[in-house]
Image 1 (tube, helix red, strand yellow):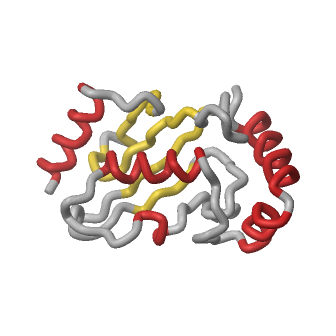
Image 2 (cartoon, rainbow, N blue to C red):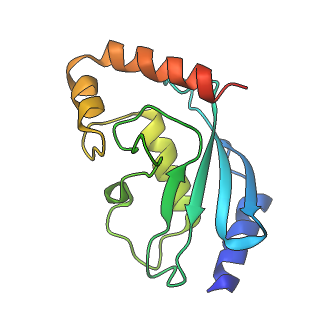
Length: 148
């Protein structure tokens, strides 16, 4: 299992994704990664750098990692209190899926926020009924927390 994680990390370092700035192990723990993602162009997160923590269970790849933003972010699929990303966004998890799949899924969430899998009902409601206000608040939080 740790062999697979090591290979996945090496692949991401050798063939970097355009939106991934950095991948750090937390305390040299192969099971906990802090990944710095760039906010997508044409999104309220553009210009920001967001740290996403991936916590891999010992049962990985048979069990999905837990994804948590360390950088505060305004998004309907992310818990304000903890930064945890809604597990449903990863879909039906299986051992063929990878850390790269997780990163792509989260980047897609930032690219095109949807109220489909909300952890924050109020933000999802705002996104559905007043997208301009949602984007205004998301941009403000990006500027305050992700542009340093």
